[in-house]
Length: 230
Image (cartoon, rainbow, N blue to C red; front, side):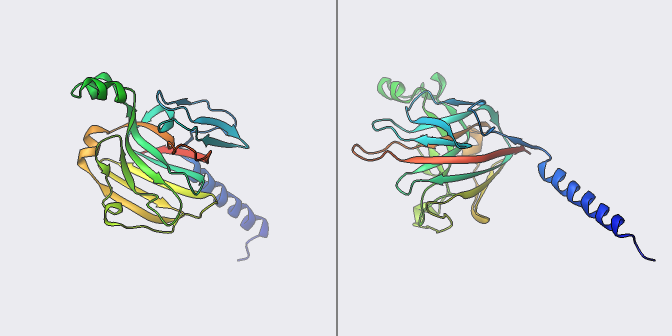
């Protein structure tokens, strides 16, 4: 039996539509490409964040500590995707499940440390830096733990980042497990109960790292930021 060409074409269009619908199902765009609606600047740090040509631009300010642009919402288990382009001389990162330190978080430290750390954004961070490097591994920003992923401590580095170009990151955080990919290459597969206990949910944070005096300015750009809760 012959099948009419228009029926074949129609079936193909339906199949494509179903694939596209499935691809979009459950995803939320965290950046509208025009404004910083849904984001807020961290209490500490003075790095500049702006919208430039459909991207979020972060720019260093000399003398500023690490700065972050925080998602207004908090997330626990999720899949996060974004594209990023970072200056080769700038260290950056994306915080997940993170929060600003409260009075309760700094209560056990001395007065000087309390004053320095109150409001500091802390938690697990997925590293962003040029190749060869440790991009994609998980760092404990302001947690006192340093690297949570073991690989950087062992001197491991990779070349999955395309320097000076856009790079696609994928992060899956589910329970005590965090997995990361850069340009389709898996980097981290971390299971850590300690960081999950202290940070089971929190904000997404786009980092602009502090810089040494007499250096910079450096910049980092993000686009196509989307998240699916799990």
